Image (tube, rainbow, N blue to C red; front, side):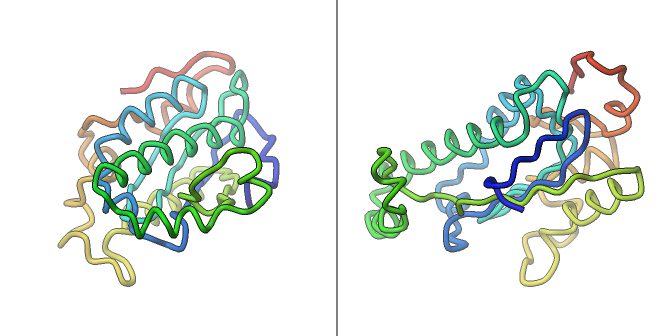
Length: 198
């Protein structure tokens, strides 16, 4: 499912994935990992609550809870992707990555170019799947946390050692510099109350 599909449900969890254009390693290339804690904090303030994450070299997986008072998943994530894209382009310009910038510029569709868009940093769509029930939430978190050591990825010796993931939060209760709410705390919160994240 893509951004063209309206994820209208609120007061529910979603498993969200979005990917860099052409699977380019733009997050790693720009070392944008340090930008992501503030980025998550802004989404939390807008009612899309981070309950699990992994930041990969070329894509991001999130488990989020969409509060009923938020503007919705599509709106909040769309804005968040746009700000992250600006940051990545700014860093690429500072690094003088002219070839990558050319590829991203060539990737802009004509209708988007007419609106002033200059670079296609992420694929146009994002995957968003509603997650219902604790068993499904656990499966999503397990998938997210093992991503750095699955398939072609060998980003750590052990998934718990990968720095840009919520695995240690769920395994050991360690709170790093990324605001996160335990999914159980979210499910136990009363409807309409703003959830406080650590």
